[in-house]
Amino acid sequence: MKVLSYDVAVIGGGPAGLAAAQTAKENGAQRVIIVERDTALGGILQQCIHPGFGLTYFKEELTGPEYAARFEEKALAAGVDKLLDAMVLEVGKSALLCSTTEGLVRVEYKSAVLAMGCRERTRGNIRIPGTRPAGIFTAGAAQRLINRQNLMVGKQVVILGSGDIGMIMARRLTLEGAQVKAVVEIMPYLAGLTRNRVQCLDDFGIPLLLSHTVTRIVGKERVEGVYVAAVDENKRPISETEEFFPCDTLLLSVGLLPENELSKGAGVKMCPVTNGPVVNQLSRLPFRRFSPPVTSSTSTTLPTTFRWRAP
Ligand SMILES: Cc1cc2nc3c(=O)[nH]c(=O)nc-3n(C[C@H](O)[C@H](O)[C@H](O)COP(=O)(O)OP(=O)(O)OC[C@H]3O[C@@H](n4cnc5c(N)ncnc54)[C@H](O)[C@@H]3O)c2cc1C
Image (cartoon, rainbow, N blue to C red; front, side, top):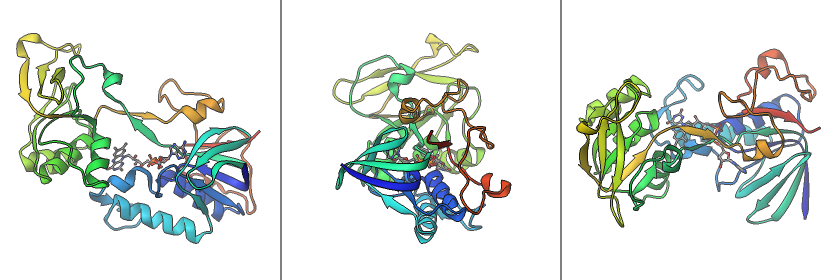
């Protein structure tokens, strides 16, 4: 098995991993590598082709891929190595990964940064009753299919969840020629930004149904429609209000779950509030200092999900 040796191994090449790798370099780590399972760096932002990124950091409006590319350029210019198409299987004193080109590889490191991002909650997580036809996607899966793979997901769509991803996808689907029948939100208030409600729903005449939920999915091979009902103050559907919305696609935008598998496998303590690892800005775990030492101003800029030193 090939063995690589680094000062810092960053797992996950999204914006957090890219920034962490670059910051490690800037703070004196000699050899830094990013290991990413995708074929490109950038993480989720590769599929966020809408503008609105970079206003704070770069003082200009960029799309997600443009923003990620800027960070990639900076990290690679700083001398960070990358290993793409390589899935990390376990972390501990070293990381074991499976690379498409190299096979099984062990990466030895002095410190590891876990920056694996999140995954979306699925139908299974929220337990919507009904049949199990094709045409049910998480908003992010639909976003990836449309924006990265040029594949359309449906023609008549209902979206469950008024988070930013759901609203952005309502606009995206409309621009691609689909009819978005409604965005349905169980809470009595919007989950995402008001700006996105205005720009993604109101500007396109897409109805937002607050205090409503999808009660049932109908369809054999493909989704044929969903039942939507108002909910009471305990979020229980009010059956007399149930209404059928014919559609061929249901998008779920119902929250994110941290990618915890590697962290749990490494014995990292989990936080019951965030469901992710216990983190803080001033880790009490011993954090290896490289030369020059990490100053308080630079250490607070580390947007890492978790910093962990190999025991
Ligand atoms: C569908 C979706 C849409 C979003 N849209 C927006 C938006 O419009 N604007 C916004 O500000 N934020 C958006 N977000 C939030 C966005 O994810 C974060 O702002 C940002 O991408 C988080 O960066 P990250 O580096 O922590 O995670 P990510 O960008 O998710 O990057 C994590 C990386 O780790 C890799 N990885 C995970 N596990 C492994 C492993 N075992 N081995 C190797 N690599 C691994 C993944 O492939 C991924 O590239 C969105 C999130 C989702 C899920």
